[in-house]
Image (cartoon, rainbow, N blue to C red; front, side, top):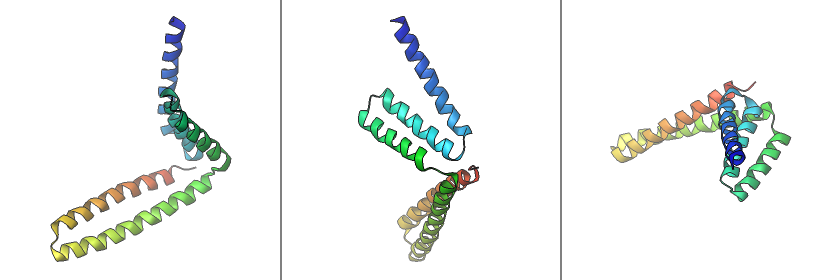
Length: 129
């Protein structure tokens, strides 16, 4: 009984330690770590279908991930986010010219959310080796 409690505590401590480590990693190593975190959580919850999917995802990432590939993916996401912001700004101007306060608020919110997302993509891109 004591051994089970100790091993459970040890697993919890190791899981927490693993969660803290990903923030220090970059590129593909960070991607692997984040998938491994999700996998550990799924295992802890005994979610077999999620464990299966995440295991496949991790295997696929380890076979195919490259830092250049991540850079290309993030660059595409940055381009798409900027295009979305431009579109939302045009929609915002139309809503402002019509005096539609509801749509003005809607597009202002969308622009702010997309800028936050864009900022995240740019930070991730800067952190890839």
